[in-house]
Image (cartoon, rainbow, N blue to C red; front, top):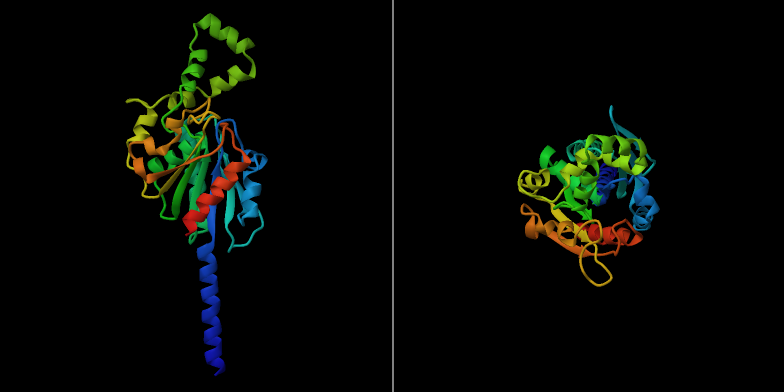
Length: 278
């Protein structure tokens, strides 16, 4: 009888462990241009996620020598948030390689858990590039993008125009242009990557490649008048439903009046995560 009880107890313990693991997911956060790991914290997104059971599990720092993980104490059975730091001035492909390294790290450490990726602004395009160009592990369940320039942004042309000067003027700008001009110079390769998607440009290549069979959610901004988009990225560009390779696979949510992250994005993510858990 004792042996039977031990078998029942062992089976019950195994079932609890399996159901606990099944409920646990990992959310990877990818910030946008000129953002950092604090963007999600200071905007209130991560605190909202915390309120709904998504625990801070670690930070991943993209570095020239590779990925530097900074794990935080947490419980294996709980939903986890991992915040990724990338060099947001680097070209898209370089940033995408860092995202790929982060996904592989998560899959190695949490092999039985689903992975959801959320990217703000440029971070959403970088994450999509990583999944399309470098492969999508079966653990990845969904990509959520917030105000992301999937079809590019005309502001990239303005930045490139600032750098396209004859030699004497360029030298003067390098001497007197200040931090903003230096930032544009460091970002020149990236700006070329995110001009509006037309044949021959990187975004056109990305948008016409086969995409992973996962779920896609586009959080699209709107103005106070109801027009979609914001001053940085048009509403059309923010919607992955307009990406030829994705189309109707993307679900659109309209939320927020500014390009930047805000606390409402935390609630939008919670809503999406609950849909995925159904």
